[in-house]
Length: 209
Image (cartoon, rainbow, N blue to C red; front, side, top):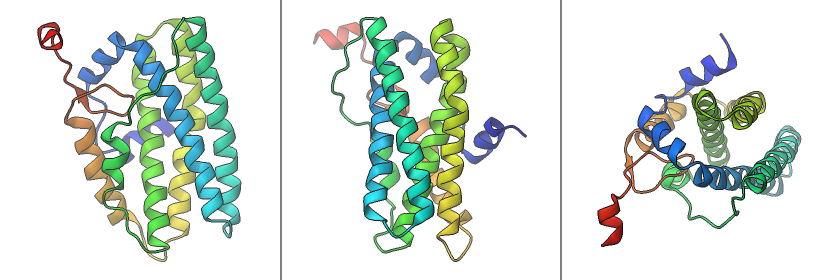
């Protein structure tokens, strides 16, 4: 079984083709939000390093993850610059907030839940890179395929940390987050983002009203 096969089994659903279809028509927006995702991933890793200073395994893995995500951020910015796409602010999608709704407030359960969320975010990113790549121009196809190995490792790091901090199996918590993640991915969304559900874009007539 390949790492991508493992990720597909971990996720509760594959990205709908309808999301892919919209992404291909919204590539500048896709790249802008992709850049934001890489920056947020690095920020999350750094926040965990500051909060949990007593966990050497977390510090090592998150330090490496943050460095890699910042490199990816720089790579996306370079692609955008070459294509004349301006990096702008975007509002957050409902994806991360939706996953955080059931995070427990006491430790180590809170940390375990955050690790599981990290695994789902990285797994979904990896799955979408693989889904998008065959439809993209050669530069973006190569770039997105190049991200699969590191993003797949990030998913595994988060999942292994979650299990290592739990005195009991975490399958039930994974399933709880899997149900929420599947609902977020499969349901209609009011806007397109890299981790959005299926975007329901306004028609030209609606936009002019």
